[in-house]
Length: 126
Image (cartoon, rainbow, N blue to C red; front, top):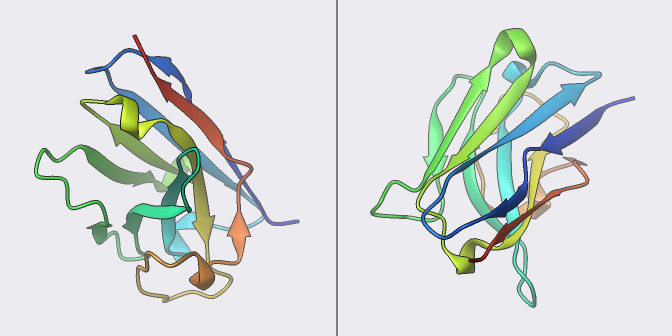
Protein backbone atom coordinates (compact mmCIF):
# COMPACT_ATOMS: atom_id res chain seq x y z
CA UNK A 1 0.00 0.00 0.00
CA UNK A 2 1.34 3.40 -1.00
CA UNK A 3 0.96 6.07 1.64
CA UNK A 4 2.27 9.48 2.61
CA UNK A 5 2.38 10.61 6.21
CA UNK A 6 2.94 14.20 7.31
CA UNK A 7 4.20 15.26 10.71
CA UNK A 8 5.72 18.23 12.45
CA UNK A 9 2.77 20.59 12.67
CA UNK A 10 1.76 22.40 15.81
CA UNK A 11 1.16 25.74 17.46
CA UNK A 12 3.83 28.35 16.89
CA UNK A 13 4.08 32.04 17.67
CA UNK A 14 4.29 34.64 14.90
CA UNK A 15 7.82 34.94 13.62
CA UNK A 16 8.64 31.36 14.52
CA UNK A 17 9.67 28.44 12.33
CA UNK A 18 8.58 24.86 11.76
CA UNK A 19 9.85 21.95 9.73
CA UNK A 20 7.23 19.58 8.38
CA UNK A 21 8.04 16.05 7.28
CA UNK A 22 6.44 13.87 4.62
CA UNK A 23 7.41 10.22 4.76
CA UNK A 24 6.64 7.77 2.00
CA UNK A 25 5.69 4.15 2.46
CA UNK A 26 5.42 1.65 -0.35
CA UNK A 27 7.26 3.80 -2.88
CA UNK A 28 10.50 5.75 -3.20
CA UNK A 29 9.98 9.50 -2.98
CA UNK A 30 13.17 10.40 -4.84
CA UNK A 31 11.64 8.80 -7.93
CA UNK A 32 8.58 11.02 -7.71
CA UNK A 33 7.79 14.68 -7.68
CA UNK A 34 6.53 15.64 -4.23
CA UNK A 35 4.62 18.81 -3.48
CA UNK A 36 3.45 20.49 -0.30
CA UNK A 37 -0.01 22.02 -0.37
CA UNK A 38 -1.97 23.82 2.30
CA UNK A 39 -5.59 24.60 3.00
CA UNK A 40 -6.28 27.61 5.17
CA UNK A 41 -9.66 27.96 6.92
CA UNK A 42 -12.32 28.94 4.40
CA UNK A 43 -9.92 28.77 1.46
CA UNK A 44 -9.09 26.32 -1.28
CA UNK A 45 -6.07 24.10 -1.15
CA UNK A 46 -3.02 25.74 -2.74
CA UNK A 47 0.42 24.61 -3.74
CA UNK A 48 3.31 25.75 -1.55
CA UNK A 49 6.52 24.15 -2.82
CA UNK A 50 7.61 21.20 -4.93
CA UNK A 51 10.69 19.05 -5.46
CA UNK A 52 10.98 16.87 -8.55
CA UNK A 53 12.79 13.58 -9.00
CA UNK A 54 15.98 15.39 -10.02
CA UNK A 55 15.93 17.50 -6.87
CA UNK A 56 14.89 20.70 -8.64
CA UNK A 57 12.63 22.79 -6.41
CA UNK A 58 9.80 25.17 -7.22
CA UNK A 59 8.24 27.65 -4.82
CA UNK A 60 4.62 28.45 -5.64
CA UNK A 61 4.09 31.13 -3.04
CA UNK A 62 6.56 33.63 -4.56
CA UNK A 63 7.59 34.78 -1.15
CA UNK A 64 10.25 37.45 -1.37
CA UNK A 65 11.28 36.49 2.14
CA UNK A 66 12.23 32.98 1.05
CA UNK A 67 9.78 31.74 3.61
CA UNK A 68 9.41 28.16 2.34
CA UNK A 69 12.25 25.71 1.77
CA UNK A 70 11.60 22.22 0.45
CA UNK A 71 14.20 19.47 0.62
CA UNK A 72 14.47 15.70 0.50
CA UNK A 73 16.48 13.07 2.36
CA UNK A 74 16.60 10.06 0.06
CA UNK A 75 18.05 7.79 2.74
CA UNK A 76 15.04 8.51 4.96
CA UNK A 77 12.55 8.57 2.07
CA UNK A 78 11.29 11.86 3.47
CA UNK A 79 10.54 15.29 2.04
CA UNK A 80 10.71 18.31 4.33
CA UNK A 81 9.13 21.74 4.27
CA UNK A 82 10.83 24.36 6.39
CA UNK A 83 8.63 27.36 7.07
CA UNK A 84 10.23 30.50 8.47
CA UNK A 85 8.80 33.84 9.59
CA UNK A 86 5.42 32.29 10.25
CA UNK A 87 2.44 34.61 10.30
CA UNK A 88 -1.18 34.01 11.32
CA UNK A 89 -2.17 33.79 7.66
CA UNK A 90 0.06 30.71 7.35
CA UNK A 91 -2.36 28.85 9.62
CA UNK A 92 -3.56 25.87 7.59
CA UNK A 93 -3.55 22.13 7.22
CA UNK A 94 -0.43 21.23 5.27
CA UNK A 95 -0.51 18.20 2.95
CA UNK A 96 2.10 16.45 0.88
CA UNK A 97 1.22 14.81 -2.40
CA UNK A 98 2.87 12.76 -5.12
CA UNK A 99 1.83 11.60 -8.58
CA UNK A 100 1.58 7.92 -9.42
CA UNK A 101 4.05 8.21 -12.32
CA UNK A 102 7.72 9.14 -12.36
CA UNK A 103 9.24 12.04 -14.31
CA UNK A 104 6.27 14.29 -13.69
CA UNK A 105 7.20 17.99 -13.60
CA UNK A 106 6.34 20.13 -10.63
CA UNK A 107 2.80 21.45 -10.60
CA UNK A 108 0.80 23.55 -8.21
CA UNK A 109 -2.47 21.93 -9.28
CA UNK A 110 -3.86 19.31 -6.96
CA UNK A 111 -5.36 17.57 -10.00
CA UNK A 112 -1.88 16.37 -10.98
CA UNK A 113 -1.40 14.32 -7.81
CA UNK A 114 -2.65 10.87 -6.93
CA UNK A 115 -1.32 10.18 -3.44
CA UNK A 116 -2.07 12.43 -0.50
CA UNK A 117 -1.24 12.38 3.14
CA UNK A 118 -3.78 13.09 5.85
CA UNK A 119 -2.34 16.53 6.57
CA UNK A 120 -0.73 18.18 9.56
CA UNK A 121 -2.17 21.26 11.26
CA UNK A 122 -0.05 24.39 11.58
CA UNK A 123 -1.49 27.13 13.78
CA UNK A 124 0.26 30.47 14.10
CA UNK A 125 -0.97 32.45 17.04
CA UNK A 126 0.32 34.44 19.96
